[in-house]
Image (cartoon, rainbow, N blue to C red; front, side):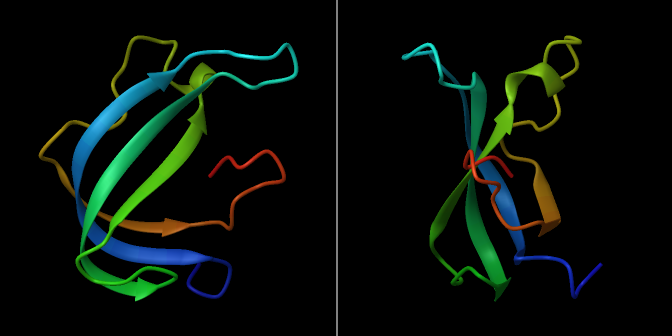
Length: 84
């Protein structure tokens, strides 16, 4: 898991925002912003880091992250579409 991760950090969720669909080729996403409490790979402690997820992961009505939640994330590198 560690070797496949492009980004590893411990952080706090600071914002969650649904991104509007613009052009017809745009993939609808949710942007989740974290304050990096401890950067380990691909981030720097103290920075803000935003990842984009396909909105379909959120359509079940279940909130995947909550503002103020503390997390430890091992993220694959962003896809060609910029999704994590």
